[in-house]
Length: 378
Image 1 (cartoon, helix red, strand yellow):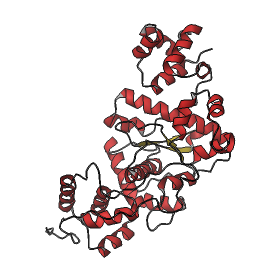
Image 2 (spheres, one colour; image 1 turned 30 degrees about the vertical axis):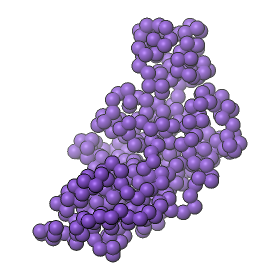
Image 3 (cartoon, rainbow, N blue to C red; image 1 turned 90 degrees about the vertical axis):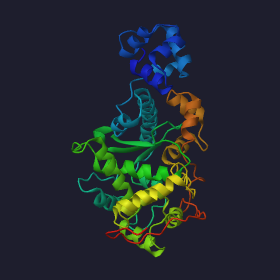
Image 4 (cartoon, rainbow, N blue to C red; image 1 turned 135 degrees about the horizontal axis):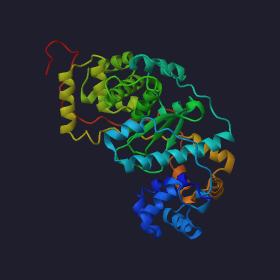
């Protein structure tokens, strides 16, 4: 018996339309539509052709449907930037990884979730979240992804980068009690760290208990405010900025290597906590654009990888994992499982201390700003 939802899942995982799959299989598009709706069963030869076209084993299509995986923040973030096809592909990539993780967790010991759900302002929620996640309330978060996993968050690393999407989050599993953050691979560690904190903000603040008063954009702004406060506690960040001479690109480039946060995010945070005013913020962003830092900033921050998925695989399938057994147990192509695990850190790759590098700050002639006054100094 072929499971209709598995045909759709394999097709969307490979980024195919129904018409494209039909062409590869040698049938008409309405036939694929009927298979996916459960209105017809493919013959054995047709199922074999579908398996070949999607590069999934036939056993994949003959298993039960997966547990429902909520789209979470992907549901509204996708509407801002992604096509429906892109949205479905990233959703199915996350859903299949979640299915594997759940199966592995059932055979190992899962960490209880300690992520709070709070109906308070983002700044206060970020401070509370640090404490509840067992983090020092002061100073940088040395490894954001590791801190999330230690707090029981299931961090999923997708096997490939997808355009227009850095991350999304959802509450999944029985009673929607498992916090999940899905990350796309990137070499920009500062961007990944902030994206992870942003999605944590959604989990903490936006659990579906209230409708957005200012629309979807307001949710993004709240999550950004949460991430800024979580990554850059106001008092600590203010003291360090002022100790180095105030807000300017030289200072922020030096601080980037310590805090692991982008210069652009630090400019925004400086405005949020009153170190600069809006005019000064705009001026600094103009300087960032002129220097070409909008796309690539100076000071490299190494990307972080989650560890838990690979660690479970190592416990159950030896180290390094026997990919053939792992793939067979989950009825998946071995190449897919191999690509998936590459997004997760080995024990050797886990850093013992801060994940950010100390690189020399780029030279800058940007005017130094003092604390904002009625008329900003230039």
